[in-house]
Structures are given as structure tokens and as C-alpha cells.
Length: 137
Image 1 (cartoon, rainbow, N blue to C red):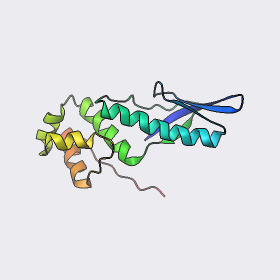
Image 2: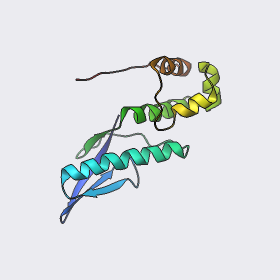
Image 3: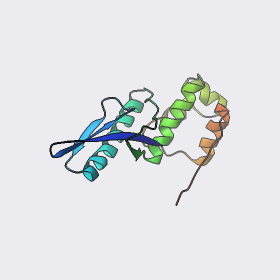
Image 4: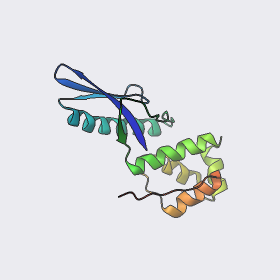
């Protein structure tokens, strides 16, 4: 999963603002430092949404932007939240369909979750979705 950041130079500072993450803005003294700061800021922004029970906006690809990869564990939590909400299900309803507890679904949608592939498969099946895993070299 990637969110796209727009980099602009203002005097000696590079500003990194995310197109699809309102309010997620940071700076660095170089493009490299601005991108590193943007990666950290984005993760904090996404984590705050999940902890608050909100669904972050989905990223879109924009011209003139730099893609920032979301940590895979965090990306899974965000993707699970989106999929559940797209299906119109509460955590309890999804849990019932998947044969897991509501607490387990809640944990999967929070930062730091480390679900097994078997659990992800149960959730995907309950959502009528296909689970895809990629290892890209």
C-alpha cells in the first residue's frame, strides 16, 4: 500500500504534504530527510485513525507525487478496516462470520497486530474476498 506525498521547496526546507491524508504534513532540510519524515508522519497519522476507530481515506495515485510505502503490518490493519466497512459489517458481525471473537477482529484492526495467514484467510473468506500475498524482490 502506498500513499503519495507532494514535495515542495520553501527556502531551505522541503515540505512533504500527503494528498490523501489531510493534515499530514512534515518538513526536512533535504528531499531525503523530508521523505523519511513523511514516512514516519504517515504511519502516525494512520495509526491515530485506527486507534480512534476511524477509517483513513484511501490513497490515490497523483501526478507529481512520490509514493511512500506503508509498513505491511499497518497496511493489513487499514485494509481489514476498509474491507469490513465496505461489507457493511460491524466487528461483531464479521467475527461471527469468521468464527473468531469480536475482540480478535478489533485487535486485527489496530496498529501492531500480527495476524497469522490462517486468521487472515478466515477473515477474507467471511468477507467474500480473496487473500493475496506478494513477496517482491
